[in-house]
Image 1: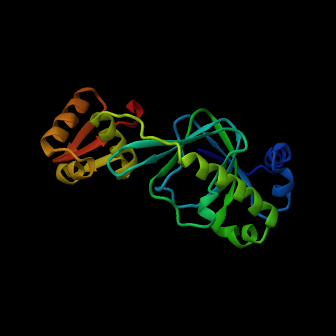
Image 2 (image 1 turned 90 degrees about the horizontal axis):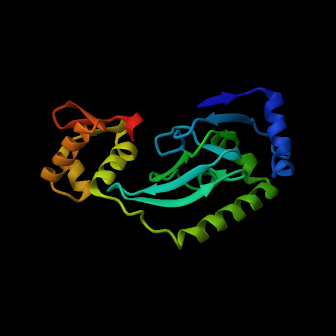
Length: 210
């Protein structure tokens, strides 16, 4: 991830944005963020709450349940909003956005500028349209079929701090499987080079492999 504060580049992106008129009316501190393919653009692990508009590239948005089951929510390309729900509600602990390719976003802090955002009727109208569309898509989503091995790896990637599973028993409870079966999957994944054992009952996901 790279943050860009160069005014000329920022102004060019805003001028080319579909939402130029609204963005130009906001007195906020804009900057650009560039992401590489596979980087998380938004996740529950991020401390800073950002509003982001996809300027170039595309993203995949999905919901991860505690058992590792993954639901695809949406695919976003140019002009897609991230952070619109975070303006009104606490950040979701289960929704992730991942760069599907090299990505550039127009960004600013929600917390720093919340009062400005809530007082701008043009901006709020855009947010209402965005949220209405997203709510409509929720009625059609289905869980992506996944094997237990896939769910274990998703659980480690999205639900375990630093991709590290600690405690076979607790993880087996969340994954709805036996400790013996989970241990077998972890052993197989270690042999395949997907995870590595770093202590008793502790395994770390090898991010470059998954």
